[in-house]
Image (cartoon, rainbow, N blue to C red):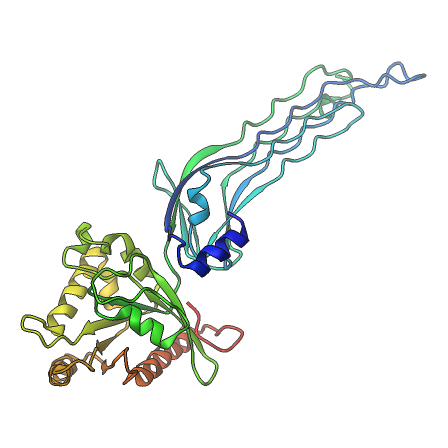
Length: 363
């Protein structure tokens, strides 16, 4: 897919999101070594002059900030590096095969499809991993000439290269992950605080793939928010869309639990939080120990204020920091962002990491 086609699709809002891909890669084979003897006028015994074969090209996976998902790998599944050139007479070595560099988004995990072995975890721009090494070139007969073996009539065979199926698994790199049940208002909150324009509608499961948004503070700090599809009870077992996208929570530094303040009978934000934490703990126990905040959303609904006050009291007694917000009106959003920036700043300082070029927090 060309950059123009990708840009047009993103503008039209019709680009699918692909966070998994299975592709076949094959490195180049080495070139043959040459068996040759000099045959020049006035030099009837010029000796062996067969050159070496060239090295086969490698297949390399490289992380790039220019890509957001693995969509390009849905159109092409087979990738080949260049073969090495054959050696020639007159001590001419074959050319090395060209390396094939495949660009993937930052945060891509590369596995061997057959063994499940992790070949590389590309979490930084420009980071590379060689997934198939090119075959070595064969040695020409000039390499084997000695004082006692002046006319070798053999060369060594070239290397065949490697081929394998690999799995590419994208885990989004974000500072803050928005986690919540369907229709909790995560997409509305992301649209309120950033320039991202996720689909927003008054029915569940409007978010079918993760959305990223960048928030910038008055001081020039930046943080990346990831809006993930809503979780439901049993997500760790594959119910709903949760299991497919829970992996994206693993990379986030802070979790923001977005709870809906719905005053209707049977709705309880405390139980919603318990469901979310239980599903994430069943998926990966370390997730529930990650720093997090609670955003009690939709306080603009009639009767939601009283429910919010009760939830704040209960969560506060448990030592859970929470904010009462409205993604629709913007109430409480500024205070929520301020605490998120403070948390990320403290984490960066405690880990001895530097911010990005604009002094912001990095994932």
